Image (cartoon, rainbow, N blue to C red; front, top):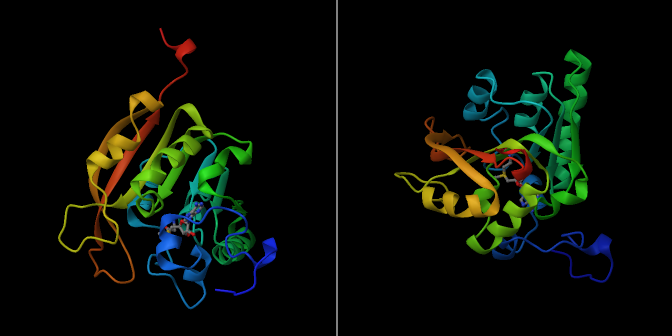
Length: 231
Ligand SMILES: C[S@@+](CC[C@H](N)C(=O)[O-])C[C@H]1O[C@@H](n2cnc3c(N)ncnc32)[C@H](O)[C@@H]1O
């Protein structure tokens, strides 16, 4: 990390609070993308997300929170839906934009990628019917989750859906920072405006797990409808 300090340009976190993962590693997320593919960057959409896309799980405007190099966002955009991918890693976003340029040439796919902190999604000034979190939630410690979930609430339409694909604690061969079903239900609950509709066992492919990938939970979470519209 740079020894210099003082200006925003010198700050690897660009003025935001480093996440627990960044504090532990001492590096900004962006550094994960400097020397070849990051461990989670499999160069294609996660199979669980591809299945969801084929099954019609995405609707309306879609936000991909922590989009990385954009494979999942590009897949969803290929369905003809408007997609915004956000991340704090500028290097990943540059890669995602390059892929999007290529795809736009080939097939007219349009997708936006923007630098944004998942803890302050309200700054986007936009709302989404579907939000995808593929591998972001599980990077946050318990004390960060309320802030992240409130941030998600600020951009998710009432009756909209958040999908969370995260490493599960149901081993063997669990990924780093595995999450229990109870932790998902504690983070998203009726008292903060969410209804966990389903949590299904699934897999996350990585570059360091074998062909089967790591155990995962695939959670489908609904933002509770606006009270004035309920009977
Ligand atoms: C495990 S990677 C998953 C990337 C991508 N979703 C995928 O499936 O390949 C987590 C991503 O979340 C991003 N990230 C971490 N903290 C973030 C934050 N506070 N706001 C936005 N993105 C964040 C990281 O830069 C990284 O790209």
